[in-house]
Image (cartoon, rainbow, N blue to C red):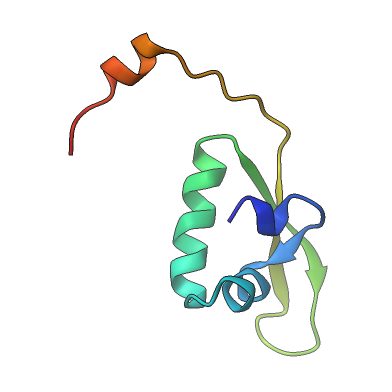
Length: 77
């Protein structure tokens, strides 16, 4: 999902089509990425057809640091 929005901002529909998943599922994942600070969404494009205002998403630059203590602190599922 992050790869899909790493280079350019896209609509949830575009991302869903690229990844072969439903638009509602893509929207759920995108909201989670937004909550965790890995993506930004904004209503920046308008359309002639409903929905007239569409939310575009793009990845936010980040660095992931993973060490043994972090792995040990993760909950088992």
